[in-house]
Length: 536
Figure (cartoon, helix red, strand yellow):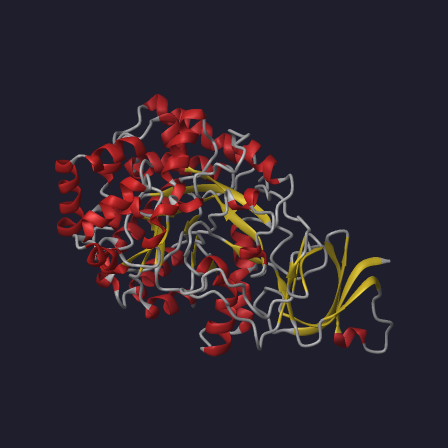
């Protein structure tokens, strides 16, 4: 007898087709039967060791978070309800060109400091890996949800070239190509870049194109955080489209937003650019989160020259009064490349997390607000935080536009990604709320997408980009990564005031056929594993 039958579910199967009523049978981690109501009439209904009454619930494939920053959270937090409770069954890690493999001892220490604002310093994690394959093996030891990994181009560059702003030598480029190939051979699904983050931003297009040629050979995809989401956003998108097409590499645009005042109402221009490329044969997808603020580290907005040489060099520059004044001028008057070419507006930058508990009073306030309370300039406050917190401060940037968010999420190549940073006292609520917010707010309340369309955006489309032949649909033979939710009540509990509140209306989540959420509660099951690239 099979393990489980989910009885009388309204199946939204991930294809975009209309829903239907069915019994779904799960055995040994896979879907073994989907018996539609009409087919079951007059016949003996399927039986199993356990039956789950799904009356009034929608059954869909598990949601795929195409842009996650759980690289350390999955290891330090076995519960991981931030994602499991949303119905996320697969996260894609290694984002924005910076993560923890491949590394050597030097690079690992540098990267840990550089992205402490995303993931914490990691003092509570045993970094017993150095290669991509070893990291994936570590994930295979048992994690809350499944995880795939992108080779981070910035980390590769740090390992080979360092943190200097210069072109790679031919020998260095050869080594970077080999490291990318090794990562893909060991199971990575593609390559990411963070082209407003050092040291990845120092790579010229020719270098990136050569790395993308390697990715294309292995059937992976390129996922850039491109060079500007502000003053040069459209040019930056066009640059990535041209680069990927020259390399013959599929392109997935990370958190494809149009932010800052210069881009208000300009989402149709972005989509026109993409539609033209798609019509010409380009292979392009994108992901977004359904919120207007962004989130990153405070150090990320600095001009690239201030970060050259790595975190220690950046701290030394900030400690020097003359150099600090030069940084301030670039931020406030010129518009630094780290802040997307737009002069910083300190009243839009909210501190969301600090590593040093002494600095907790700053969280939940904008830099401008804290500066007023301290009786000093905003840059003086920001500089104090950068130095005192050793670059580990995380921020929200309130620079987005709702009409752009809605326009982009309707596009047929759109997928969902939280870009969720789980570190910090007051993180962005997208980390805990992205997927139920799509279903509750944008489907049920606003009707921006139909339920069937939205589920396809969150399931089959990302699975297709990841080239996963047995995930993303409710089909016989597919892995039983499944979500049961109430379409009338599903909603994000997380808010900007209470960002760690769990969602409502998602009682059951199965990963690899095991309940990780049951009756609205997290079980103790660690059913997630590393999901490796499917060989060509």
